[in-house]
Image (cartoon, rainbow, N blue to C red; front, side, top):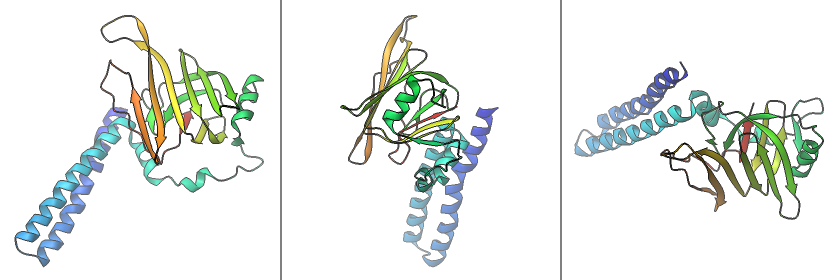
Length: 228
């Protein structure tokens, strides 16, 4: 059902830029009824088709809800100070690790999303947090999950924790390590995806070999969100 919804909404959203381009092309051609008006109209149509294809692909990959959340989200909301009676708590990396060691952290498990890139299907691949450690000298956090999965986060900053979401707004580098069946084999092997912020862009690398997976990231996305 979810795939059908994504398909329908993806088609509708993908066609919208072409409709807008068509309207502008009509106005332009009314003013320039010559070869230049035609060329401009064609260029607008080609650009709209490319944008529509990208929108369609994005919705098929992440879902319409996540796509709309990215489009309409305001980064200012992430920096609001939680109220005293709020379920959302602002943490430091050291504090979050200490709470975990005492089993007092309020967020326990969920699906990973790193700089906008999901680990598995959106909202589906839930992992339990086993342990959180923080090295003050290296400014490095390590979160160990179930299913032989872990992430190492360099310089995590602005951490928000609630019963349903754990969010780290910024980080210098995040490395995801996990186990998966090797391509053409029944044995598991170690794989990784690395996300590094360089010159206000997210550079990625991976050793995935069982699927052609585009690591879809954006610097405007939160460094790490784990959804319950």
